[in-house]
Image 1 (cartoon, rainbow, N blue to C red):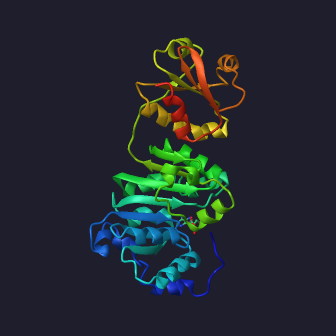
Image 2 (image 1 turned 90 degrees about the vertical axis):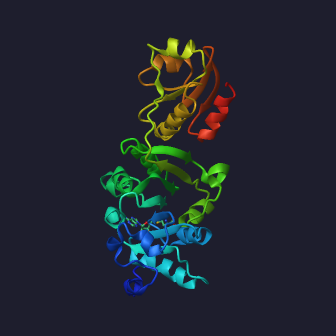
Image 3 (image 1 turned 120 degrees about the vertical axis):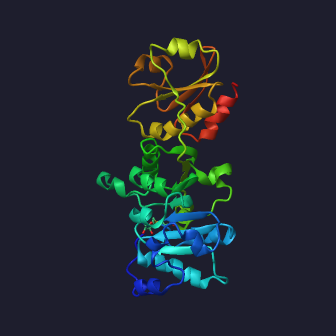
Length: 324
Ligand code: SAM
């Protein structure tokens, strides 16, 4: 979001009591500023501030910092703060580029990071500027506490797919994901809409969201091939979930972390694995895989149920649970 330059916005920010003007001097001392030891949550790219202000109003027991790069945008947040009936003592703003985030917050000083409708930077050569890129994830790792989480929402499918793909190389763990937040009862609970979310969801766009953490969990899903298909799938004593996929398939990439999560969840109860249809075209042909991702549950050597296409993880869990 880049509004036309608003005359006087820099001056207004310079004089505002809601803005921290020397953020680098606050490093490791944010709790002193708030005068308490409450958790600290930050929103990067807060835009006009609706989301973080709503959080600050509803959670006086949490401290918040909203970060925005452009004066012409931040000034809108300041105007909103001025219009509040009661000042929000648990919220401050910073005008800065998030590239400098590790100079402003100390190690493990932040409890939660929110990224909402981050700029997509669609050109490949700008990938490093995307706020959920591995470069930024590495910066967030430095400031987030061990049990901290990062929540990211967007309506941009390409950006979301990219963000999911960045998790593994940056060693982050996908805790929760939805491809249609506003129809996801669990993840929609306590949702606070941002300005962009209001606009794009009213146009009918689905909203994607993930919650990630830095904990590493290393349970791996199976890889099914012609060599092991008979033994691992057809003769398995427990149900088997097979994800027929290909490396070039966008929806398959979106499903990959979801399948990984299923492997963790059902470890010991269901074998969860992937079958690359380009490498294993005889298996794909035998099971009539016409479109991918195709995800099937096998019991006693036979396909019991199949779902085709990218779907929410809950739908796959429902299918699996029938055979437990
Ligand atoms: N989060 C708001 C919402 O959902 O309504 C605003 C979304 S807007 C598309 C993205 C915002 O992130 C813009 O206001 C932009 O200036 C800000 N932004 C982009 N890159 C940034 C960066 N590196 N550091 C700080 N803010 C950034």
